[in-house]
Length: 122
Image (cartoon, rainbow, N blue to C red; front, top):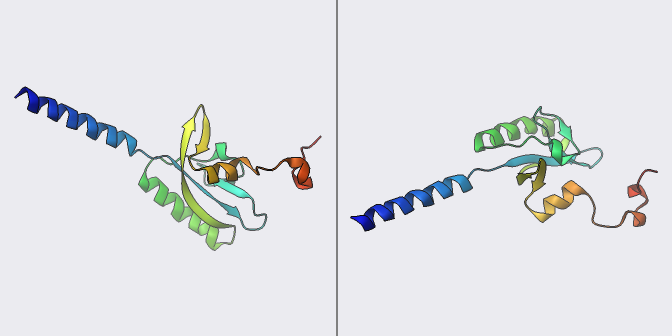
């Protein structure tokens, strides 16, 4: 009997860990059609070039609703390539999980002195 109750307890713990792991955090990203800028959808439905201003979506229904709303912007030729990406919120910052998306959020990986359009404002 003791073995069975231990097994049930362990199974419950495994299920609880899986449920916690399945909680997703996603944001919407795309590119502004005219400028080509990488943009992120805010909680108010606007688009920002700052990833930390993105509205973090916590469940599948919220992601689907945001994608449906973003489809209207795509139809109006404001954006292209809208997609939901996985993120982690750490220390108040929104950090994309994939390297590709971190590069898109943080900017080019080349030194700015090689690209005149990326030189810091002085």
